[in-house]
Image 1 (tube, rainbow, N blue to C red):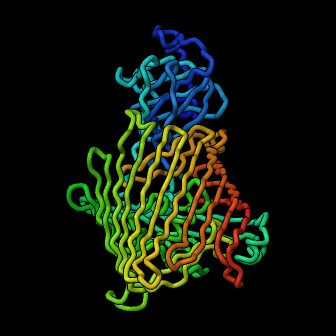
Image 2: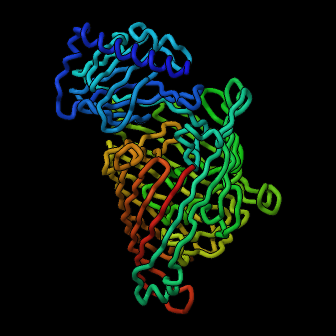
Amino acid sequence: MIWTTLSVVIFTLTQLSICRAEQVSQEPIANVPEVVEQKIVIRNITFVDPAKKKKSTTANLVITNKLFDLVTQDDIDVGHGDIIFDAQNGFILGSLESGEIANFLILDADPHENIEALLDTKKHVLLAIHNGVIIRNNLRAESNISALAEQKRIKPKRTGWLSYTPPPIVLPSNYKDADWIKFDNDYFSTILIGALALDRQSWESQDEASLAQVGDLQDFNGGEIRALRFGIAGAIKFDKPWIYMITGATNTFDKGFDTNTTDNVSFMDWRLDIPTFYNTTLSIGKQKEPISMERLMSMTFLPMQERALVSDALLPSRNFGAVLSGITLNQKLTWAGGVFNNWIEDEGSLSENSTELVGRTTWLPYLSEDENELIHLAFGLRYSNAKEGLRYASEPEFNKSATFVDTGNIDADNSVTYNLEASWRKGPVWLIGEYTKSKVAADYLQNPELSGYHVSAVFSVTGEMREYNKRSGTFSPLRVARSVEQGGWGALEVSTRWSVFDGSDGGLAAGDTSILSVGFAWWLTPKFNVNFNYRWIDLDRCSFISEACNLQGRSSGFNTRLALFL
């Protein structure tokens, strides 16, 4: 009974304060005329979960034509006619229903902990909006951003990722009502990460030459669990925290020229990232080698479902080693170098297993002031002493497929691989290209050279822009400006790719391919994705199943995928 009476009194006092503010306030902003598609954008508002009063989230709020529009932690595009405020981490109180007239207060104290914030709203109110109109504004002057000024894109602060290799699975973006996936104390923190991708493959056409080369592709039609990844990541809280990550998956997702394809569960990444001197990081453990943007980025966040054939054929998936990386020239140049030897997982001693030296450097020769447009260039180099021999093989950018190119086992003295990258991004448009060449030192095969390239054009139909990760010289996953949960359409990205591989040189006849791909990816939310790829494949090589040679086979097919993230 006492709480009911107190609630009625608080509500009455709040309404009286707002009514008095309507009568007294003579500020010009109270008479803002209704403009078509005019927005009021309020940044840095603190939202408190009533069920868990110690839990709070900072986000941005948008009112469009007096109606409450959305709450988001993402950037919001603003125009010259919009009104923008910084709420100074004030606490919001009111009803937030999409499509309804906006009515709320922003207070300078948490009303759940300080009852005086409700009893004396005149003293504690920072901003009051009634019927979609600003009737009280007590924010500091510097928090009122001119609607006529050119608005600079403001990026939300993010938790840094120390290592050169981005995490293979996106870290959860919303921790509300998700305490079960995270743990934090004074010494370390841990959070669960996971992803599931379900594929459905269908081969649509195959001519007689292709049938003679690789057999009937219809045998590979059907569905599969393409990705089932899980793990933990967190920090060990030294003065300069160390970051650790352990992830596992089935081997079918750990594709590379030296990786067997099985359905067994294995640990993909187990790595410790240690901050060292002069803004550098030492990463120790099983990890991706620092070469090729397409290799470094997680498969589930690439524009296409699978990496280009040349990347799977000539570059490894993961290896055990140590990488030292850093960033310089005002965050426009990155470098990374490492030594690898997988003796800890393979049979044999350190000297009996292959040792690799791998390095990559990236450069931003052009970056616009608002970072909307950039040019990225990179060079990678990989040397292997080939102690365990070499083999280059791959499917044709579909996982459920026969092997299309295969060198067989090569007894080589060593190999050297070069990788060149170039990207141009302007807003929602992204052009990408890579060229890779491997030189194999094997006299009995006339020292063959295998090479290939791929070029992609990517466009975000809904206008989102892939952010650039300056520490690793890679692009981030496509962000969702307004998910279907917020009444939006999510984010839609369309892409096309042309890839070529030349696997016939010297004494090798692995096969030559050219593949044209088109695809689209629809992110309904940051944690749910639906995408589709279609490919036309040309293969020039002899048959692996008969004596037939000089064959030029053609085939095509499509794959659909559902991807879910923790």
